[in-house]
Amino acid sequence: MLAKKHILLIIGGGIAAFKSLDLIRRLRESGASVTPVLTRAGEEFVTPLSVSALAGKRVFRDLFDLTDEAEMGHIELSRSADLIVVAPATADLMAKMAQGHADDLASTLLLATDTPVMAAPAMNVRMWDHPATQRNMATLKGDGIRLVGPNEGDMACGEHGPGRMAEPLEIVAAVQEALVDGPLTGKRILVTSGPTHEPIDPVRYIANRSSGSQGTAIASALRDLGAEVVFVTGPADVAPPEGVETMRIETAQQMLEAVQTALPVDAAIFAAAVADWRVAGASNSKMKKTKGGLPKLEFEENPDILATVSQMDEGRPSLVVGFAAETDDVVDNATSKRKRKGCDWIVANDVSHATGIMGGKENDITLITGSGTEDWPRMSKDDVARRLADRIAKSLT
Ligand code: C5P
Image (cartoon, rainbow, N blue to C red; front, side):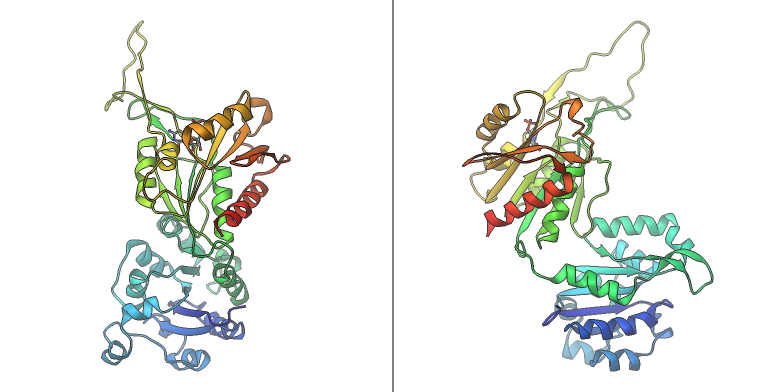
């Protein structure tokens, strides 16, 4: 369970703070040790005495506490845990986290930490639905913070809807999922996903039909096996997975820059459908329709990100996996693509319109490695992702 795991629990100022007392108990029952941090607003809802009695430890409250700083500085405190849990994560705490504020102990710890963070939001339904909170939530997810809840139901304020803090046992289950070691624990893996958009002018672009679902499923499956995932995504239809660091880009050139920033990694999975060409000299102002005249678009080649990383002389990931979306001679084309690009594996699939694969829920792939070709039966993209993640784990360990 959670034996030898150390949780830093930040209790924010909301009515749900009373559930955090039970959360401390449940975490300790699972074997974890809990160091509590109480915000000023949190103290209005639960007392430092009950928090520290349940945790069996002193509670940290002040940023500028001379005794605390002498015993354990706030930076050290922020790094000492296996996981930081913010429960309840109030609208205000979420806003501070999203903006990177550091004006009290809780926000400073959250900014200074290099350990994973999980937040259990709790607030009035209107506050939760407010665009500002939704924006902050999206920012936090993009920063790799895992969210648990909120749940829907009756609220202390008399309203009904999403905003109730997840129950203590649900939070404990999420903590276990985040902390239990998997075969990819300690491995950093890059996944590219989605289409790219190549501008013609400020309002028009060239794109493709990639939904990003296969890349997203692969990133989630790798995360579930314990990997630290960096997810570089174009403008996809599906939301990026939680608990991974997400870098959003639009063009192939931006994708290459993001990938280079993310290196070094142990493995790189290039599931993105990158545009092969971009419009040369894309216009900075909207192209006008002229009577009888048609615009002439000239193209230039985009960088081949997969080939660039596969052929790195220094710091090449141990495993580089490319995708081959083909409409004809799938296996032959993919086999020569593997050689040409220099990657280790190619995941090949037939994206002819009739297969329904591009943008669909299922995939029918052939895995081409140095030792041969494997046809996998048609299965859901989630199952393809899990099977591929298992193979990646076996190859890296
Ligand atoms: O050459 P093609 O586009 O068919 O190759 C597909 C594979 O190469 C995919 O893994 C894709 O992510 C990657 N790719 C790339 N950069 C490009 C084009 C494709 O990384 N410019």
